[in-house]
Amino acid sequence: MATSQECSYTFVKVSLIVINVIYVLVAMTMIGAAIFAGAAQKLTSLPILGAVTAMGILLLLISIMGFVGAAKHNQICLFFYMILICLMFMIQFSTSIAALALDNTQQKSILQTGWLASSKTTKKQIEKMFHCCGFDAKNLTVFYDTHPQCANRLPCYYYLQDSISRALKIAGGVGLAFSFTLFIGVYLSHRFRNMKDNNDLDDNFF
Image (cartoon, rainbow, N blue to C red; front, side, top):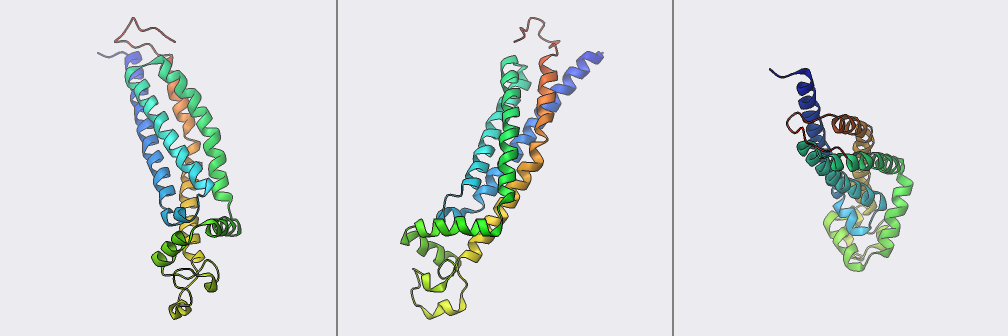
């Protein structure tokens, strides 16, 4: 019959594995939300979206480390996992706040800078993709020039801004809400490190 110590060990181990599986799913959501603004990414490399994507990839790698540390009860993996999770919280929290703090005016300024710096080929792709004319004025069109169809089409900014706004809200919102759950991983890994594996009495603690 299993003792309370054995049950506690198993419970914490399984909980740590489950929380890291959840971290993997959230990381994939963050990466997917940033990629969602693919049309705008053709126009400009938005720093906030790039940072959110990087955080998603980093979280994915840290989660794998935590999963291995929990499955193998590896003291070194768990030690560095705790440190990286704490750093991850600070970076992810600030990045998510920055993503949510961008208002429409700031988004338009960033998109306009990217539009002006983009090549004619890129602008043509955007105009053709969204069936729009110019950035925020139809006389700035590249693909359609003075085509009469522009009279019935909106500037491309309205389509690009919608894509960017939704991506920022999803990525920033998920990142902010999730950043606080990172403390669960820190608590479980700290507790698990100090537990003795009943199946391996010769285990050396780091």
